[in-house]
Image (cartoon, rainbow, N blue to C red; front, top):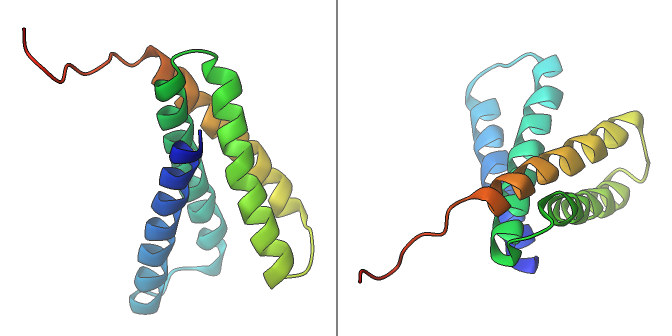
Length: 119
């Protein structure tokens, strides 16, 4: 599960860096930043759930929810260190992370294994 969470966090870092570059070049409305970061969090948690559940090959909902929860825990810790507070937006991110991880977990369990060698 640690590998999946690591991949998810890396994807989130890359997408957030791309968002920051885009924001420095394009004038986006401030109201769009929140929804865009929600989509980024969902994508990262889906990847984490997918990779984790694909490795375990069972209990996709549980493994995906745990992967999304771990990513949320990292985001919560960073938010508390940087902002020093807890707001309603974090609860929405928790829901987004857990549901995204669960969807990725189900997809990971049901994904067909790739064939690495031919017979």
